[in-house]
Image (cartoon, rainbow, N blue to C red):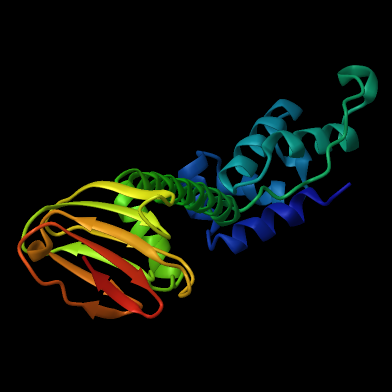
Length: 237
């Protein structure tokens, strides 16, 4: 239960509206508006006018007009005539500003989620594209850049032109390590302990540079030669 008249007057004062202004807006005469605020309902022509004026005036002040009609019925109208009606407690509507803040927060969260998905998708696509463009040679280069590999004991490089080369471990009857043409600008490395020996046949010695244990071994002549590479040195035949 709440006071009908006082709540109407307080609502009008909060809205800074005087009775003449309310009369112009609601088309209800000032004396009837004043009677509603003072709960002198007997000054109105009938209960029908009271209910209509209550609903109109309360709605104009931003209140729930039906709530005021129900309160009037419960207090001034017999239950047999109008029947028992459910009572409602006055409740303030949720301010618009609060609803607006909720909407803004939800929109911001949705935007953040969309931007995050776009960034993750672009990162995954870019990573896959970069990985796909790497050639086997580039992959090996990156691997060797991370792991330091010691220099080969024997290195044969074609610098002036191509040359046929065969390499055996130990001697001419030893295991064959390499046989073929070394193209200009390419290098063939052979690892092994310093105590191991190699037998090397070269068709064009003038086109090659041979490095043994990080030292360049000079090769003389323009004819095919055979080299015996041991710990003691290099013997040319």
